[in-house]
Length: 461
Image: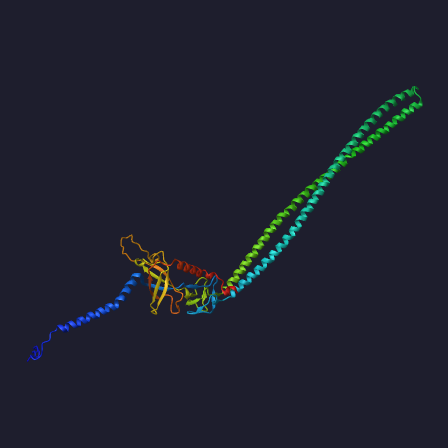
């Protein structure tokens, strides 16, 4: 018997068909399949419902506002470092210190300059007060001298007029007397000649002749007296010349007094000039005070403090390195201000509104966090690409653009395991949004952005 030959059926055994054997597994498989469909159908329904009610993307990252700490307005060598990477610091805490020697010298120079400016201002003030007292007195004295000179000039003018009238009146009177005396003299001479001839002829008596002779001699004496008075009156012309010279001297003195008044009046301009100089000195004092304040400010800035409370994530310089103002030395961020930036495809934006809830799956730890949409950016990420799109050549491939979405984490989340830069997957629920929550969140963000204007404890000291 060949082993490969089929077995010979036993006539004593009943013959069994294969229908029962093939039908049972099929039934069992259908039962199991129906059970699996019944078991997984709710999950599938929830998955479909979740996918249809959410926009999901893997292009999302946890970010934070990085604060770069750099020397403000000063440069120098670091002499002390008080913080390093991964250190938590408080607002106003000193992070590092720059050598202060040169800045102390600047403060000393600024203080000396301020003292010199104050002394010069005080000196100018004293000179101004002196001028304010002297100039009015000088003007008053000059005016008084002018008034006296004018009075003396008026007096000399009156004296000249009186002398002129008196002298010329005396001259006219003397000339009249000379005329009268000359007439009397001529008449007496005629009488004398006539009576002398009559006396020689014995026509008159001796007494009459003597009387006529006496009258003739008297008229001669009167004429001499009148001529003497006229000569004396003519000598009065010298008094007129003297009075004129006195008047001229008084006029010159009056002119000089007027010039003295004008010169004294210029003292008011000197006062105004001194006032301008005093204001200039005041400005110099203010400038010196500003320089001193700047020098002290620079000295205070040699101790660089933390602008916020946060965690240092990068340290670029070490003790002994020379630093330049404006170049970052440390970088830190506030863990409480971490957020998620999700770059959502433009085809999945439908149903996303500010205020909608978000589920955030953290790849690093497998945790699921919660948050809410703050805003959707007004432009796509391609607008800020280093290589802008240019399709004028005709070669164009349509690429789905992505819109950045800012997501705020819920406040009750434990942030110890969250780090800036981690990758996440976000699922944003569709809905109408929550404008009230968005307004409140934006207000809080604005308030946090202005907290850097607050005075730190180091500044208050």
